[in-house]
Length: 121
Image 1 (cartoon, rainbow, N blue to C red):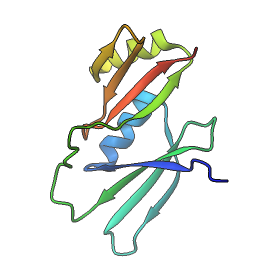
Image 2 (image 1 turned 120 degrees about the vertical axis):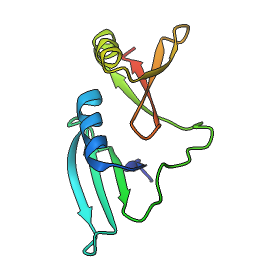
Image 3 (image 1 turned 45 degrees about the horizontal axis):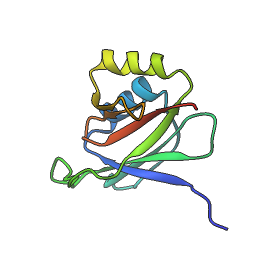
């Protein structure tokens, strides 16, 4: 049997991304790996409730902003208090799309990745 382990986003500024994921989603580093020569840094973020993690990858030699194509992929998180999460994200100015009919919305991280916020149903 196979089980989910982690999902990856490549980031252009690790410190900025770590701050965003802490502020927006309460995700905290649970593990990190850095190459001896400083070519890459991996930081795994956890929610403190599940074993699933989000891997943030920083590559020293990447030339700049990542091309996310049409951004037809996303990570989704479930909010126990959907209204409070929405208020927080609205104050942060990171909501990029809302679908009122479906009762969901998306936030965008500093590198342009979309994260879906769904209510507990």
